[in-house]
Structure formats: structure tokens, C-alpha cells
Amino acid sequence: MTAPARGYLTERLAGFGTTIFAEMSALAVRTGSLNLGQGFPDTDGPQEILDAAVAALRSGHNQYPPGPGIPALRHAIADHQRRFHGQELDPDAEVLVTTGATEAIAAALLALCEPGDEVVCFEPFYDSYAACIAMAGAERRVVTLRPPDWAVDPDELAAAFSPRTRLVLLNTPHNPTGKVFGQAELELIAGHCRDRDVLAVCDEVYEHLVFEGEHILLATLPGMAERTVTISSAGKTFSVTGWKIGWACGRPELVRAVQTAKQFLTYVSGAPFQHAVARALALPDAYYEGFTAGLRAKRDRLCAGLEAAGLEVHRPAGTYFVNADIRAIGEDDGLAFCWALPERAGVVAVPTVVFYDDQAVGRPLVRFAFCKRDEVIDEAAARLARLRA
Ligand SMILES: Cc1ncc(COP(=O)(O)O)c(C=O)c1O
Image (cartoon, rainbow, N blue to C red; front, side, top):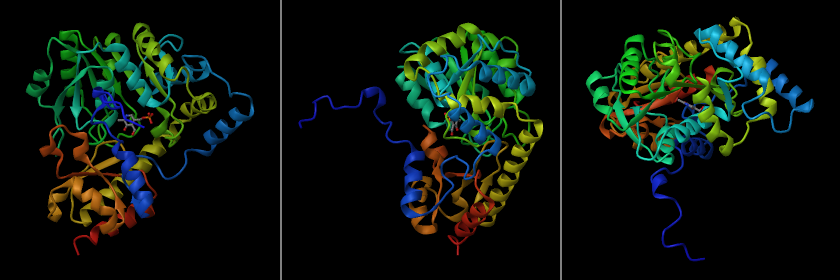
């Protein structure tokens, strides 16, 4: 077979190879290493919601569900937003069920951006953002978050906006830094959106993983409800990352726009899992409190282990992840370090630099996931400690 002269992959997607998570998880399997790379828990979610999924499968919920999602789930999402965030939503017009937050982000960008529009985002950024911005034909304008506090520089933020800015793509609590955007920073971002008539897409998949501070919805700030798409999913909150049930919420016109793109991406999303997630969202406060407390303890456990191993730890306020600076153990290239780590220590981690355009800032940082069993965290820390010996 002769390859076409133009090649296969479009220019838009050039440079977007296999995601780092897939590469690192494959490396973990290949080398039998402990996987602190990809952010998925190594235990299942609550039995009662697994049972609800099985019951849904067995009771005939196996055909295409309604396009916006089954009514029970849309109501459960609206109830959840009111209960935890004080956000009022009409479940029939302001909630769209998607195939994970990933699809919601893609659909939002495809629906809301014209080619040539600019999207302001914060680096390090979750890897699908750059790819989805590119697929929409838009361009990213990046504001850099730097350790140790990952603060937004107001001047850098202002400079990222231009007359071509269409939207701000925000993630809070933030992967991979673990930052929880505070009130003042959100006000600053909201101010730019209002002043410049810019939309916002806010990815909040770690909304229940806040250990310090408070999760504030950008959509609840003055003037932001009419311009913000709020996105989340069941994957992290209920430890079912493989189910891929997510949602996009906002004013009817915004949700309708996102649905216009979504319907041609996947049409509809996982019917039986929608039933189970509707049940999950209604779990009592004790579930949510226990979930947060459990992950807080894991954060503390891994941070202590990494510190004992000699790394400089940037303690996260939220999410599943902690970043460590490897210069403290005489290394400085996170990418080379992570590729060699399975061989050297039997541990897989993710080089934070892959989430940065500014390579110099990300170079010495390595991201470790702590959504793992305690014995896995302890063993990984012990193995890392041997690196210094
Ligand atoms: C910031 C962020 N957004 C979205 C996702 C993906 O969410 P989902 O699995 O619901 O598509 C992840 C998963 O790691 C994430 O970290």
C-alpha cells in the first residue's frame, strides 16, 4: 500500500500523539510497576451503585436513552447542584448528560468556538483541552500557574485576552496541580468574562475532592450564569471512571448549543449507567463526607511518603494528585525521570511538563496520583525512598 502524499493525520491534530496517561498506564502493565500515573482508583465505587447498574442492565435499560439523558438523572444532577453548590437548574432545559466530562468539554468547544477564536486556559492543563481546542479550529492563549502556590498572575491573565477571545476554559479543583481556585481569582476571571463578553467552560470533575478551601462555582458569580457551562462527571466522585457518565449544565441556550454538537459525537450516553448514577448522586451526605475524608487521608499519606523519600512536595488543596519537585533528589528532567522510573523503582508517575507549553516551568515536576490503596501508596513511597540510597 502506498501512503497518501498528504499523510493521514490532519495538521490540526499533528503533535497530539497517544495521551500520556495511556502511555504511562501501558508502561505500568508492561513493567509490572505500581501505577501512580493515571488518575483512577484501584478500588470500586459503592456496592449499592454497582448493584443499581446491574439492576438497570437486567431490567431492560439497554437501548438508546433520550438525547439529553434520562429524566431521573437530569433531576438528580439538578438536585445535586442545588444541594452542594446552591445552583438552581431546570432539569428539562439546563442539564445535558454526556459521555464523561471529556465529551462535554469537546462538545462545548466544538459548539461554541468558530475557527480562529481564542480560548484562554491555565497551564498546566488537562491534556484533552489542547486537543479539543485544536479540533474546534480555535487557538489557545495560556496563563501559566507556577509552584509553589500556582497563583494566577493578574497581568498575565489580562494579557491573555484579545478581541478574538471567545471563552475561558477553567478547571477547578485543578488537575494536575491540585489547586482550588479561590474567590478572588474567580472574581478576576469573571470580571474579564463580563467586561469582554466572553463565555466560560468550567470543568469541575474534582468538585468533591477539596481538602482545603472551598469549591466555588464560576457560574454562581454575578453575571456568570448566562455565560458559563458547568461540567462534571460521576467518574471521580463515585470511583467509576470507566462508566463515562458526565454532564454539562447552564442556561438553556448554552446547553442547547452543547447538545447540538454532542448529538453528533455520541448521540446518547450509557443507558444503564445513567440509572445507577442517578442513584449515586442521591447518596446521603455521609457518603460524600467519607469520600472526601478518605482521599484527604491518602493525600497526607502520599505527601508524607514523598517527603520521606526526599522530594519537595507541593501539597495539593484538592483532586487526586500531588506534584513533587525532583531537584531535591538531584534530578531535573521529569520526563526522563518518569520514563526511567519503572526500571529504577517499579513505580509509574506522570511528568507534569507534558501539561505545560512553558517547558522550563514544568521540567522538574512529577505528578503522583494518590487515589490508590494505602498499601500501594506505602510501597510506592518505600521504593522511591530507595532511589536516594
Ligand atoms: C480535569 C479533568 N477533566 C476531565 C476528566 C475526564 O473526565 P471523564 O472521565 O468524566 O471524561 C479528567 C480525568 O482525569 C480530568 O482530570
